[in-house]
Amino acid sequence: MSQQQKEDSVLFSLRSLMTIEDERVRQEDEARRRSEEAKLKLQAQLQQSRRIDSVVRLAGGIAHDFN
Image (cartoon, rainbow, N blue to C red; front, side, top):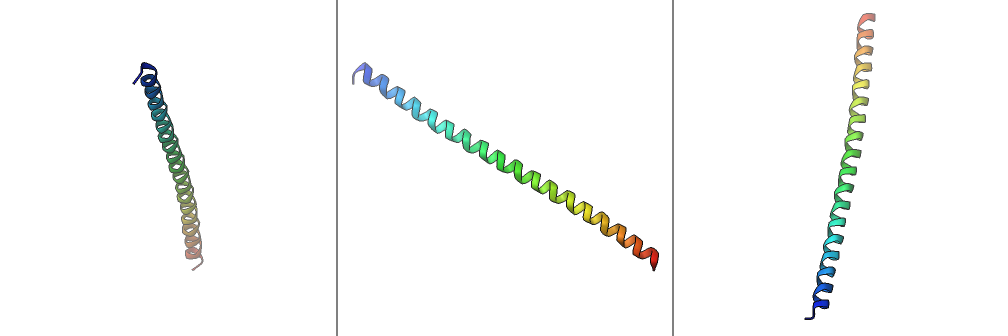
């Protein structure tokens, strides 16, 4: 194998590794984004649940006062 062929082989291998690494980073970024979106959605649901619970307690207290 000539020196040029060896260099070409090394360059090809490096490019392949860089492509694989780029894809891995892209997948990790996508997973992190989906995780953050899910977290924000759950936080919003929790806040809504707490608001509803507060309204129910208030309504229960008002109903109790009228009885």
